[in-house]
Length: 315
Ligand code: RUB
Image (tube, rainbow, N blue to C red; front, side, top):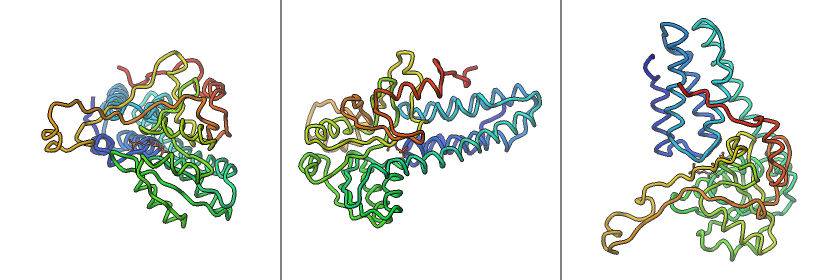
């Protein structure tokens, strides 16, 4: 096996440290790292090329467990790796990665147009975390000439809502930033809840940043529709065969600093990064292939992935 490319090492570090974060952004970074591994290196023979690509994919896969965009990206590229010479293999990975990256950008634009059709001129949208798929819907609505305002939840513990707020301000969207606990109070003032997804399960459950499920339950109680913007790379094929989605648990220092924790005394601190919103609390999943009621997303999943998901990174 050839050593791993500096880009693979750097991308692994950036995803692990969350410098690169959000499911779609993670997917694009992983595709580019795999492409660099393929195009920029001398390999002794086809076997060592393939073994190195699989090892790079396994390392990237280890970074964050919940966003299915990561294995879906690696699967897309590695299942298209073919050829009997190093050059042919290299070209196949280069082409697959480039096609994938273009597809990703196109999908986000297309779903944005579809999501924007659900938004009316003058609407206010409540957001949670930072989702490029969700923001694409607002951007498209603004481009259609609609006046959209946003209530942005800060999204403890890492405050990704601040990134959302900044990007919305850049789009010219008026933003009201609120603490997470104020969400129910402000649901009376909004027309939509709009979130992204890290994974969508076969039963239509939406796995997204912790706090999405309580927001969705409250929104249902207040009669506010919940839209999830998620390109099809967020569909989790392993849930077709009964697997569940692993929820990442992150370090407790994101929740409380060591000094305060010591002062409080003997406590346990938990920091799950994501939660599961059952399909009954979600009105629509907006993908580049159209909008779906959550319960029917399984048909799209079967169409795209068949009945089972390959693991082409295994030795
Ligand atoms: C990000 C998050 C986002 C989804 C979708 O969590 O939950 O809502 O990843 O984002 P984290 P996108 O900050 O822990 O990565 O639409 O950009 O794929």
